[in-house]
Every structure is written in structure tokens, then in C-alpha cells.
Length: 389
Image (cartoon, rainbow, N blue to C red):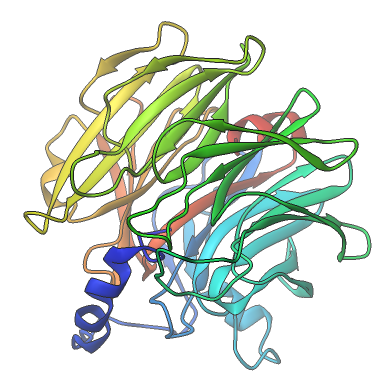
């Protein structure tokens, strides 16, 4: 999610919400032909648009590989009886079994849909929910727990909710640090990135480690300020992104060996979002500097085995010059196609760019407001697990 829940949110919110919307804002469901039909192993992918905070305009798009058609705002057409549609600020999306789960942050819910039809099945009420992971019939969801407010003396710690995916009931909660964000599950443990994002300038800097069987927090590991996302590789390395403090400490990526219980690498690489594919991290860095009030944009590919930056380029045809605000990235591990999401001005529809493995543009399309999260949908569960990590 964009830096909504920290000091940058409060400084920018008035300007963002007061700005005039352009004529290309469209909320009517529509279909657009993008490419020729491709292959059947994957049906397509869902794209969750976050929407502007407090405007209740999060939306869901779908790209169908078999037809080459991109469909916008499909939740509204599939669920005309839901009065508030998808809700306020879509923060994460995942598929587990035959169900599609969308974490809707400021609507305080996880929306549960049929993955084939996107017809609403129900919802799980979790306050200020953030990210979701699954393990053996349960969903684990991070929650800030408290209200959206910047306060260096914030007293409400966050928690991880354990949800029975059969009943959609929260069956247990485990308290962690302040404003927990990213979550990863590995080797019998749940790892949670505590951000402390509401507690400017007193950010959190720890990873909470929860025993999966007892569902109790065992320890907190100090890493860096304002932690955000987590990805675990096949060698037992937990990759951690930290936002920094926007003044003197920049965002960065850290590698922590969960088997040896030690930090093994700091990458010195700016990061706002990333994805992993074939032992590589594809990283976009939209670094906001509170001193200059400007963004610096960077692109990097990291070799996760060697823990080295392989390239400072992802796009190789110059298209990056037209991408205003790179916000999300996803790589299809079957085709190696690279999807880059452009939030543009955060108020009007964004853009989705599809590049081939060489970073050459294949197609682009308008999305909803603040396109942010992609999840693949298909008929091969093993491949889907790899694709959606």
C-alpha cells in the first residue's frame, strides 16, 4: 500500500483529495481487447486497485489469457446487490483453493469471493487489516488493530488473526508489534514485519516470530526502521524490505538467515515494491525524500543466490520514461512476462504495462485508481503457488 499510514499520508492527503478528477475516471464495468489469446495453463490474473483513501473506490480488474480481454471493475458487475461495492483501500489479494481473498484495509474486512466468478461468498471482519498468507486450511492476516492516526505515543499494538477458511471465522489472535505489515510462513514459524508506521518518528524495527503450532509470539528480531514486506527464498533466507524514515534513513532490503538466526546482508537498494521469480528479486524503488519533497525512482534486479544486484534496469525500451509513479510489479514465472503498475497521480485511473522477459513493451492498458496487486488464477496449483509468492 502507498505510504498512507505514516506521516506522508497526513502531509499529502488534503492535496490529493482536493484535486480535481479528470474525465477518464470510469467506474462502469467494461471489457477491452488487449492481445491475442495465449495459453490455457493459466486462466488469467486479477488486479486489485487500491483506490483513493476515504473514497470507497477500490476495484477489481481481470485479464483473461484465453481471450486476450482485459475487464475493468468486475466486482461491481458480479455483485450488484452489494451496496458499497468492494470497499475502501484494497491492500492485498490472494487465491487459496477455489476462493479469492481481497484485504480491504480501511473497510476493516477481508472480502471472500468465488475465484471463478468473483461472486461474493462472505467477509471476515478484521480492523485495519493489511496482508494475508495461508497454511493448512487457515488464513493469517496482519492487523494494525487501532484507528488510522499518526501519534508517536500510539498505544495499540497490532496482531495476526488466524482465520478458519471453512467457516470464515477468526479463531485466534496473536499480539505482535506496532502496525504489522508483511507476513511470511516458513519452517513452522510465522514471520511478521512490524512497521510502527503510525508512530512517527518512533518507528518499529522488528520482525515478530510466531510459533505456528502454539500460535504464540516467541521473539522479536531487530532489523531496521519501518519494516514493510517479506519474501522467503528456497534457501531459508528471509528477504525484508524497510521503508526507512524518509529523512536520513533510506529504504533498503535486508537478508536474514532464519536457520542460522542472523542477518547476512544489507543490499543498499531502494525499495517500495518487489516480486520474486526464479531466484531473482525484481525491485522498484519510489523513494520519497521529506527534505526535498520529491521522489527518486529506481529499478533493480537482485540475484537472491549471490545476494548481488544483477542489473539496474528492468525495462529496456525506454518505456520507463512514460511511467509516472511505478507502484507495483509482478513477473509471470511461466512466460517471464513482467507487469508494471503505474499509480500516476493517485487520483485518476492508473496504467498496467506488460513487458516481455527482455524488458520490451508488449501492451499497456488503463486500470482503476492506484493499481497495486496482481494474483494469477489457473488450473495448476503448484505453478500458481510459485507464481503468486
